[in-house]
Image (cartoon, rainbow, N blue to C red):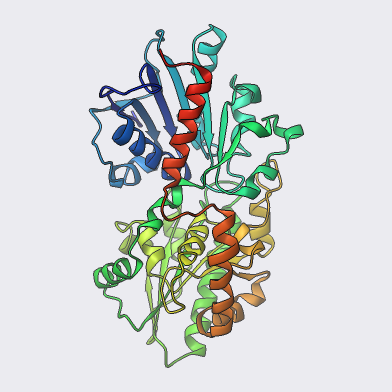
Length: 427
């Protein structure tokens, strides 16, 4: 019974939210990061009925650790997603980024049941929400195979302006007029984050001195066939580079914060690849910091490294708030070697190079040999850091519609409200 249903009962919602039951499915970290803030805004502001279905490892800590403004009225465990019996009440399904095998547990069963309701002439709407640019590319074909064809996708809520071009209408079939740029609710938390306070909290918790440079690495799930050898190669390369960095700068103190993917199934094998502690290098494996949310870990790092994790986008957007060069948590470094580039071609479609890289809002190593020198520039070269910070606060901020006065969840719910009004689903 690995599926959890959190249900919030309606609390006298007003039109157009009365008579609407909202069903949300999330089985992937990106999916819950995107949908949980939207769910919270719905139940807190509009008091509507919501059922959130989650499965897998995100049930261990990600969902329980999310601070819902209003706790669910019930939490129930199931073996399968089974929607309540269809009534005259309209249903709105919200689905976000996921990938096989996660999507098989909650999202696809939900899609199949919504498709059956539509086939039977019941009132239902389908909304997709990105966690990051292109994240729905592998979702849409899967939904199509389970009865949610492109013409049944009523809205796509996009993370950034350029996301529209990653869903060619000829390939995906979703009309452009159904797409809206709301920004990603995944990144809402950093709009109100006190990064300096988070940095202080985490460093005290992990006993890291404030004059120590912290480098974080954010891994991919090695057990998936596409990532297995890749993740082992990347962890080994980054570990070797961190060791070389410490050797090159014996008068500086470094801490390496290793964070494996939440769904990682081979932790012991990967841990063996980490560098050894040395006089000016402390290595903190995942197990020693796993109770601390990844967002807080990234806020503590002077430099974050990954192949293509959304954690790096989060770091770049943190920088768009206009923090000073000495602030932590805002300098990402993408390792876009052959392995990193191949991430954006999995499984069926070619993804774009990450937008922070395109806009110069991040450091990037294009091959293994560059990694050490790029890492040193990102840590020690004020000119390089200043250029990255400027691009974050200008081009990147505009691209992601990153308005710190409004949450992406609020904008997403506003779009859903407009959809309900034009669909005339309210009594």
